[in-house]
Image 1 (cartoon, rainbow, N blue to C red):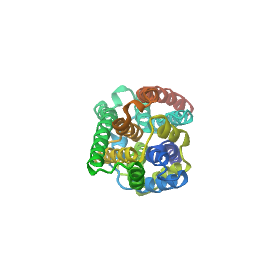
Image 2: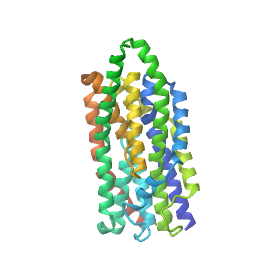
Image 3: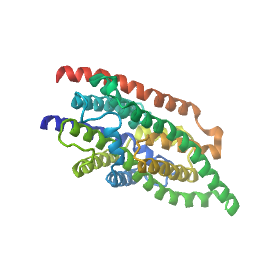
Image 4: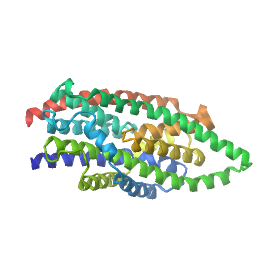
Length: 332
């Protein structure tokens, strides 16, 4: 049993570490693009606040650990977790290599569902819980685009009413605000994303009968928070390039608006105990806020490529995890 626990924890922390450098761009791309923060400081800043956010709560972890399937009663739960984690790690590395800001949340949820189907059958999936999670994953970027547009429109109106049209002064002011909003976004990112690795570890611990509840032990919180913080400190420069340059030209004013909006959406979902894709939320916030200033400057070809990746991530992850479970089970 101890060996299996070690394997599950190691894979979950590896996933969390990869999630850290895969999703670093989420919190710092806009502030780097506008030069509000230097790249080196931004990565360290995000790493520290990712760690703090990760140990803040555990409701999302309980959702991931228990809403897709019941780890206490499911057959072959340990091998299901291993297959799901391997699938999520492989997809994250592939999309990172090609600089595509895909969703670590989508791939983990899809992988867990696929592995459960492969190892315990369709009837073992809690389809109501799975559907609830999928609805949040789909709706959250739509909401983020709409609210990002609204927040940017309000800020623009306030600036116009104030009569302050000096671009250089506006840039200086909002670069300062971006330092604050980037910190808040890093904290929010850690609070939602790191909990997914915590949830999958708890799933494995319950399946192994190491514990009976979905409560997250302190050592799991600290381990997952540390893994994400270390991963963030490495920096996902490929994805940062996509987020900060290939979507649209980011200025301090819409960079601040998108960071603030993303934080609100992510914090709301975390308070509800629901995992969402921070990548999708932040990308949608950038597009929504940027569209207020320069709708025609949005690089819609890049947006289309990203949306296609979002659409295919869950089904591909399900298939990959389904197949990997067969391999893991044969060699177990």
